[in-house]
Image (cartoon, rainbow, N blue to C red):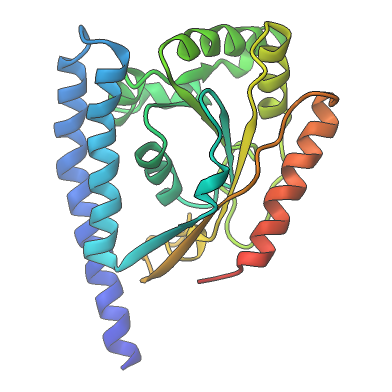
Length: 248
């Protein structure tokens, strides 16, 4: 039985990879062709790809999901601060929160097809070499996205951290909220916890079947905080929920 389950995992993971290799260039090309269209229209094309990836993970690898706490989603605009332990939540969040502007390092734009399509999906890109200027650039880009009706998605840990570990939370999410508040945009932060990293891990390549729990928690408001204290609140909220959710 165990050998059969392993074979099923391997076959499903390979099929998912094949789907990614076929669909990503197609949608990357479609997004490039949509460059003259409004930003939200381009995002809908990107979201078709992410929705297909979520469905392909379900069909090929048996990765299902449920969402808890939908009542906590605030009115737009808001910042989604999510745990980052796999690729799954990246495509899921782009599917669930539409249209969404992801805060990401500029280097992602250089990836063939994915990066080109990502660039036209209206992300907020950070030049890490810009130092103090990077935050001003991020806030300026965010104000433009607010006008266009986007919500923001950021991974406070900065990179994927294998489940059940926790990375050091960066202050970027807090600084974005505080920077926008200084410009008159008092928008909340929606913390998101999940256990996707157990089923679609950063390493190894093979996926596991199961039910992912995505937990949306009450919004956190930046008023009365500095970057350090707000980051601590975000970290404690997400990591406490991570422990409560546990593995699938």
